Amino acid sequence: MDSVASPILYISLLLVLLSSITFFVARQVLKTRRIESALSRLQGKLNKEKGTAEEYYELGSILLDKRLFTQAIAQFQKAIKLETLEGQDLAAVYNALGFAYFAQEQYDLAIKQYKESLKLLPEYVTALNNLGHSYERKQLAAQALECYAQALAIEPANQTAKRRADSLRKRLVTSI
Image (tube, rainbow, N blue to C red):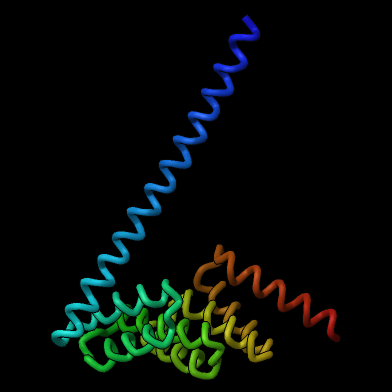
């Protein structure tokens, strides 16, 4: 009985493992196809005609995910120039633009964009975290801590702000 059970158990485990791998690969392929389809559709449309701010933002976001930062920046700037977005939507565009500059290590430009985002939506926690991180990269610990403190005042459970603020405090204590 034991000699029959072992091969069946191994084959069952192998089948479960292969099924799991197949599921995750298929899911990733579908996700990639959906993104590439949206990219192709948006690029085709926006090359032929003027689009909406939302379309430029969507295209910029896809390009940002693909790490095509210069192209993403151009799309975000087009979305802003249309002047049809306001409030939270415009703040999201400025935040994404700041992220694209940050990824290119253009921290001053990133800080400027994050500040624009926060002018529109002062309680935008993601922009506060991003601004704090930019200040950290510029070695401006006091400003970074202030941003993280503001983020924590708005959202006390914010793990990113907690972790970054704790890390900064430890570095400041050890350097004194």
